[in-house]
Length: 79
Image (cartoon, rainbow, N blue to C red; front, side, top):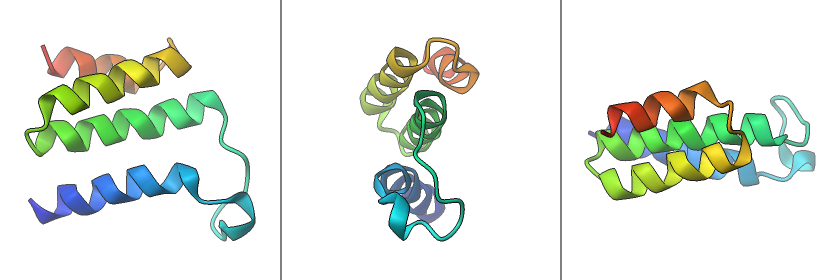
Protein backbone atom coordinates (compact mmCIF):
# COMPACT_ATOMS: atom_id res chain seq x y z
CA UNK A 1 0.00 0.00 0.00
CA UNK A 2 1.37 3.37 -0.98
CA UNK A 3 0.34 4.96 2.31
CA UNK A 4 2.54 2.56 4.32
CA UNK A 5 5.46 3.41 2.02
CA UNK A 6 4.88 7.11 2.61
CA UNK A 7 4.56 6.65 6.36
CA UNK A 8 7.71 4.55 6.45
CA UNK A 9 9.63 7.33 4.71
CA UNK A 10 8.36 9.90 7.22
CA UNK A 11 9.21 7.75 10.24
CA UNK A 12 12.67 7.16 8.80
CA UNK A 13 13.39 10.80 7.92
CA UNK A 14 11.75 12.57 10.88
CA UNK A 15 14.32 11.71 13.54
CA UNK A 16 17.25 12.75 11.36
CA UNK A 17 15.98 16.23 10.48
CA UNK A 18 18.33 18.74 12.10
CA UNK A 19 16.70 20.71 14.92
CA UNK A 20 17.35 24.01 13.17
CA UNK A 21 15.34 22.79 10.14
CA UNK A 22 12.37 21.48 12.15
CA UNK A 23 9.62 24.07 11.88
CA UNK A 24 7.00 21.90 13.60
CA UNK A 25 8.36 21.27 17.10
CA UNK A 26 12.08 22.01 17.12
CA UNK A 27 13.81 20.02 19.85
CA UNK A 28 16.36 17.29 20.21
CA UNK A 29 14.72 13.89 20.24
CA UNK A 30 15.37 11.88 23.39
CA UNK A 31 15.71 8.10 23.50
CA UNK A 32 12.06 7.58 24.47
CA UNK A 33 10.76 9.66 21.58
CA UNK A 34 13.24 8.09 19.14
CA UNK A 35 12.10 4.61 20.29
CA UNK A 36 8.46 5.52 19.56
CA UNK A 37 9.38 6.66 16.05
CA UNK A 38 11.30 3.43 15.50
CA UNK A 39 8.32 1.39 16.74
CA UNK A 40 6.07 3.17 14.22
CA UNK A 41 8.66 2.48 11.54
CA UNK A 42 8.54 -1.20 12.55
CA UNK A 43 4.74 -1.13 12.17
CA UNK A 44 5.07 0.20 8.63
CA UNK A 45 7.66 -2.43 7.76
CA UNK A 46 5.38 -5.18 9.11
CA UNK A 47 2.42 -3.88 7.10
CA UNK A 48 4.62 -3.92 4.00
CA UNK A 49 5.51 -7.58 4.64
CA UNK A 50 9.09 -6.80 5.65
CA UNK A 51 8.85 -8.83 8.86
CA UNK A 52 12.56 -9.40 9.58
CA UNK A 53 13.27 -5.68 9.21
CA UNK A 54 10.27 -4.85 11.39
CA UNK A 55 11.44 -7.17 14.14
CA UNK A 56 14.96 -5.72 14.04
CA UNK A 57 13.63 -2.15 14.19
CA UNK A 58 11.32 -2.92 17.14
CA UNK A 59 14.17 -4.64 18.98
CA UNK A 60 16.43 -1.64 18.35
CA UNK A 61 13.70 0.64 19.71
CA UNK A 62 13.63 -1.43 22.90
CA UNK A 63 17.40 -1.10 23.21
CA UNK A 64 16.91 2.67 23.33
CA UNK A 65 13.92 2.51 25.67
CA UNK A 66 13.08 -0.86 27.24
CA UNK A 67 9.78 0.60 28.48
CA UNK A 68 8.54 1.58 25.00
CA UNK A 69 5.02 0.14 24.86
CA UNK A 70 4.69 0.66 21.11
CA UNK A 71 7.80 -1.42 20.42
CA UNK A 72 6.70 -4.16 22.81
CA UNK A 73 3.26 -4.25 21.18
CA UNK A 74 4.82 -4.42 17.73
CA UNK A 75 7.05 -7.34 18.74
CA UNK A 76 3.92 -9.08 20.03
CA UNK A 77 2.26 -8.65 16.63
CA UNK A 78 5.33 -10.09 14.93
CA UNK A 79 5.19 -13.41 16.79
